[in-house]
Length: 158
Length: 392
Image (tube, rainbow over all chains, first blue to last red; front, side):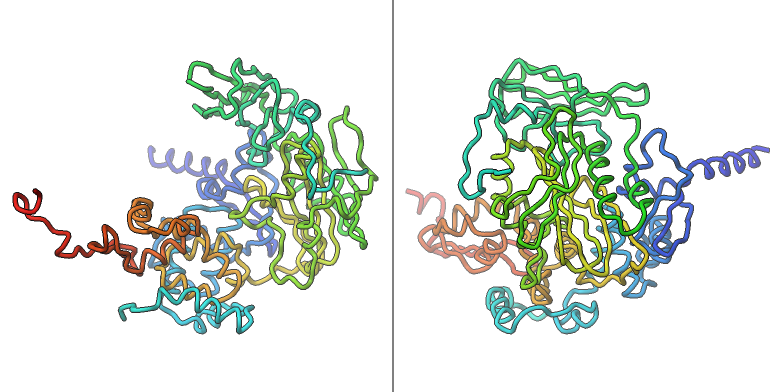
């Protein structure tokens, strides 16, 4: 009896505490309000008292796949193991989306993860890896090498 | 409409400056309209952008003191459901005077994204008109304008929303020299880096622009960019005595970006807009800097070679601030004799401290571990004293 009540109230709560988000590929997703609250950009709108929750909130530069990943990450309380299953493209997409949605915790988490990935990799490797265009002239690049020379002198190989 | 050129600023008497601009917000106002900065009702309000007050309907209790920089004491969000208000309480001066700043809570925050996205494609005029209305409603600024740059670089006010008692600016043409240089070079194709600061959280408004706004009697200014269709080929800028909207037309990407403003952001896409796959290189500078903060100095310096965006991000002060030891200022004072280094960037201070630095007549040496930022010290035997023998 108690269990049934619990289930009912849970179902009821879920119905109330969901916000519909519409992703760039036109998919409407119902997301729990606790997760949506982490998205500062959406939060400011849904916190308004008489906000109309029936209208899907548009997120024109977050794909449904990325939103799925973000929701799973938040649900799993930012589980490292789960994130290790992400492809590099997915990592980048989540980073860009977290920045857009203004999700502080996720942004810190994903930035740490990518930073770990970038650690001790060669410049050429990272450029290729993340599809970054080298927009320096050879002179500019030499200049930077020179400016930052101090850090590489007498550095222990570790 | 002739305005004082920004290069030769003519200070406007503060009495006239206050007239149109008493009710304006600084650009860090939150859309929830709960906490406005405190009012400073001094006899001679200075046209500084840090001074702001509530929008016109606000019930403001003026300060009995005229201390220009109030200390924020509390900034409570009062319950807004009862049609009540948001408020700010400030302590002035020695703490004996209290200023309470109240304003009516708004019934609802305008739903700009849906409102803008529901507009028909391709009608820039309608978009501008809707933007100025929405922005004014949202921010409470006195005047919101969009102005368009023509080919000879002069600007025309193409859209405006203002307080009813103000003189309309719509249709006025600004000579090219009145528009800050920084605004006009936005579209220069020779520049690889965009000069638009919309995505930036690390840089402030151009000083020239701030002076220009002050000359116009503005006490607060807010810039936003509308990018329509990709690479910048034409642009317009909006501007008011307390408000400024920037419009930039560009190529394959179609976005309306409110990013400069309270974390509120929205995109308008027209039919042919295709979502772009993100590349790490497309990240805003602040985001790259955040990423770099999690790396060690040698990695940061190496990544600075990736691209210009990474190089610029690698100079962010907060990255190096976090790498420097907490007491680095003391070390700089103690060990670095040349004062010049104290004025340089945090990265340069870090670099300098990584070299061995002699102090106390060369008997002691201090340096930072490059990778971890830990402090290392060597003390010469000459600097050692044996208690009872050497201390006489």
